[in-house]
Structures are given as C-alpha cells and as structure tokens.
Image (tube, rainbow, N blue to C red; front, side, top):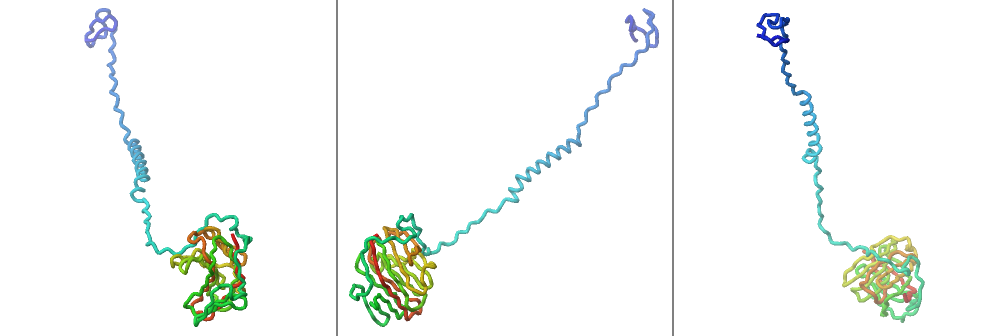
Length: 289
C-alpha cells in the first residue's frame, strides 16, 4: 500500500489514481539512500615519506651528537712528566735597581783606599815557589803561574760594605781560556764573591758560599773586553744590589744578600794545561758608595 500525496488515503499498489480524491498518484521515486561515505583512506605514502624524513632528521641529529661522541671523540693528550734533574746554577734575576746603579758609570765620592803598587811594603801578600809567584813588579801586583793545578788569590785586611771598586787588569801571557778578576765581600776562603773576565771576551760573576760555587752571572760574551790590552774592572755594591762594569761599560747587575760586607782581593784561574800564565793588577781604588 502507498499513500496519496494529496489526501493521505491509502492507494493499493499498482493504482495510478486515489480512490478518495481521484487525483493521479504517480509512482514515487525510490528513496535514494545516500551511499555511505567512503572511509577516508590514511595517506600511507605521504606519511611514510614524512616518517622517513623524520627518521632521517633524527638520524642526522644522532649523527651529529651521538656519533662524534662515540667515534670522533679526540684522544686525551697524555702528559709525560720527565724526571727532575739537578738544577743548574742560574743567573739571579735582579729587582729594581736604584738610580745610582744605572748603566752609566757611577761618579766616585769619598776615596776610601788606593794602591798603585809602587811600594812593595803597601801590605799585599807575596809568595814564590815551584808552582808560581805573587809579587810586586814594575809598579804592578803580578801573578805568575806555572801549573794548572791551583787557583792563585790574595786579599787585603780592610773591610768594606757599600763601595765602588776599580782596578786595571792585564793578562800578559798564557792561554786565553784562563780567567782573572777581583774578589769582594770576602769573608774567608769558602765565602766570597768573584767578578772575572777572560781574553776570549767573556765575563762572569760567581758566589762561593760554604765552599759551594754558584754562577750569579754565567760566562757571557761582551765586546767591552779588550782582548789585546788591559781592562778596567769596576764593581759597585750598595746593600744587596751589585753592578759590574768593564772599561766603563755596564755589563751586568745582580741582587744577592748572602754577604753585605767583606774584604777585597784578586783571583787568577789558569786554564787546563797552562804552565806560563801572567796577570798584572794596577791602580786599585775603592770609593765610598
């Protein structure tokens, strides 16, 4: 049964007209049920590509942060500590030097002592034996050495604290490798300072304390040394500051307070194999500093 769309009466199947109102009843079009919406397919390929990209990015990040940590990490530097060796005597680094201790030659003040060695009775020791001789000769104080076994030295009796010392020194004969110079602030044979030069054009400053030698200034080349003539050595001491001059040229300065006063003297060291070394000292002067 179907219903009339105009009066609502029931109309048997197959009748074209309504029995109540007489109007034509056309076959109603079949109800069209909309087909169910197709399920939206998940975009497998784009997602797979996206997942792949994400994975690649993750892999790249892992490669940056993980791989270097596992593979490319630098090997730690191995520090090797060498055995400590016996210290070699080193030059003493000076602190600030007073104005008087500048490179210009200091101006002497009060003359405390002088000797031109014209008078053999002026008080310096003399000696002579098979190894050598220390003597007044021709107005100089001369060391003549016939062996390389011993160093020859002599010192005075007067004590000086702060002073300026000047003396002429001349190697008359012998090996250029021999050395000679002045003792100062001398306490005894085991304690003193020594400023010395050689004819190869070098100088040094040494300290002997309790019998042990130490180079305060190691052997150093200097064009100030006259390799063919006499040299004027000058030592300036003021407290722990010491300055050294050769022919009025400032060559070195050190600071050391081991000895602050003492006597002065001369020191000559023959080179190995030396058998005829002669060194003469003259015009010794000491001024108050």
